Length: 343
Image 1 (tube, helix red, strand yellow):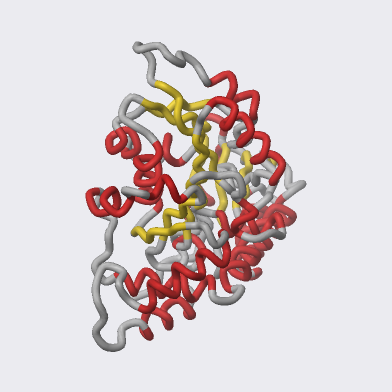
Image 2 (cartoon, helix red, strand yellow):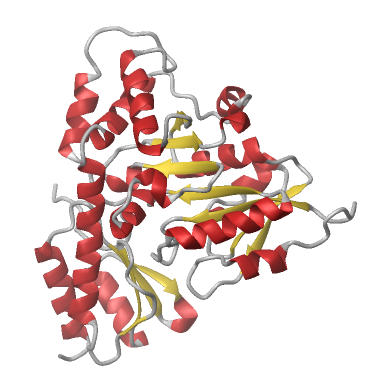
């Protein structure tokens, strides 16, 4: 059986880092208590605090949608609303799960680059006090965004100020928080400073299935263990989830993986920038490249290389680099694009 082709569709398509698999194998020794009452989970939770602050309180879950949904459940009531970009994963890629499980409403805000601004948030705050309107309660931003753009620390600080002025909570979808921190040259905690709750992702950065809900305001976590269980996100053999975080967070592996993926994205953008018919549409801040290609070139390229069309009407595509993307992968893909364009 031949292996699957290497491509640029998603960082979910890459395999697990060998150190992550080795850590999971080490965790398989012997018997321990279930549901997180084990030494691996204790160590992993301490490591999360090392990276996010001693006051942080974390709970491990299976996947990104689970992390986002349970985060929002802890922050809002059924008649309340979440302000987010229209491109946010919670709004466009989670099959209505946030609204189903929270009972609340998502207020999507169009943005040119996937990032909210204080002005956009202010304009979305409507109907406060009206019994006919869902009441704004949470602002959710994605770091790095669905367009691969990264919020600078001062940008999050400005959004946080608007939230505080209006009594709103700030949630960060950090499925690619490691990529953002590597891009900014800061810690994980600094890359989301000002948030109340963070959905911290490891799966896209070399793990198998490992996400965390990190409460930077621990008061919001008071009932979260019940929320997690009721939402089917409590792992019985938690040590295998925890072991993945240990592998990534105990040293600099999280940063090495993310920085490499970011570098490969920049390399890809540099190699195709200037080709006739290619237009890079967003800054390449993290590990994603968005580009417009000639319409007739997209399908033949997808037959050879795996990647997604982002906006079919605009002929915009998305290319994602992973922790295991090689310079050879980038070179072959860039050469394939050039060939498809007649160069």
